[in-house]
Figure (cartoon, rainbow, N blue to C red):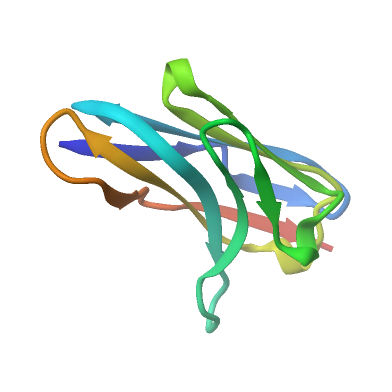
Length: 120
């Protein structure tokens, strides 16, 4: 009943930029932390950035200074602005959210993922 849908992935050259969006929909009462993770081929899923409901952020060292996470609580949407992209940023990017549904328990929901490919 709760869905997270990512958009904005694609292919860019090194040094380029992309902006990812993730919109949550369904019977939502509130969303606490939201975040972005990524998984490259043959590697484990890793944290990229997280943001609390009031805007406190955490970034992986590898993306600090290049990526910016933000959210619009009125739209139940989280964004990831990615600048100065590098080939090593190539991965499937997933968003997640800690969601309190209108009825039920707080749970973590994940999007389906969006591919980001950075060529050198």
